[in-house]
Image 1 (cartoon, one colour):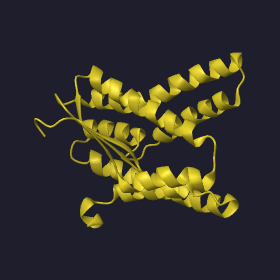
Image 2 (cartoon, rainbow, N blue to C red):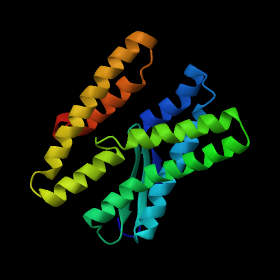
Image 3 (cartoon, rainbow, N blue to C red):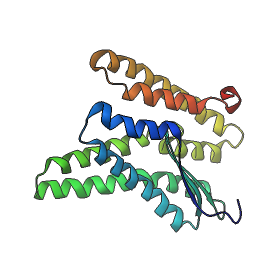
Image 4 (spheres, one colour):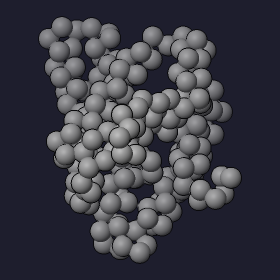
Length: 197
């Protein structure tokens, strides 16, 4: 990857969902959610910059943004800090928006606060490729170098199954596909790469 400039990429499924979701749902909070997601990724990028990394490729996927970087290798503690920077950014923005909404009550500020809280909480779930899963993987690999990644994948599969099961219940009660889709994406990411070919 030497000599290549940083590239921004979007997966086809991400583009379809991003374009069709607002049209199908008509939800007014979706632009706020996408802005909160962008601020989440900005937290990761700021942490990466502070740790001396350089972005080689930034790709948006259904499971979230994937950042490939170069520079010195990071310790397990630095990997944890990099993973937690996104939820920390959302937590900071949620506090700022809540404080602003307390002073200047506004529906969009309340919704924006909620978007940040949901993103931070969801990303802290101990499932790959979420930030909580990356923290779990780094901690397990530091303690169990040979088995850490396998244990993290097993925990991720369990969380994905729980989310998918809760999603089936939610789908039956309200017609909402969100949890089912999230569980499905996590389960797909925990499959061995050979199983996907």
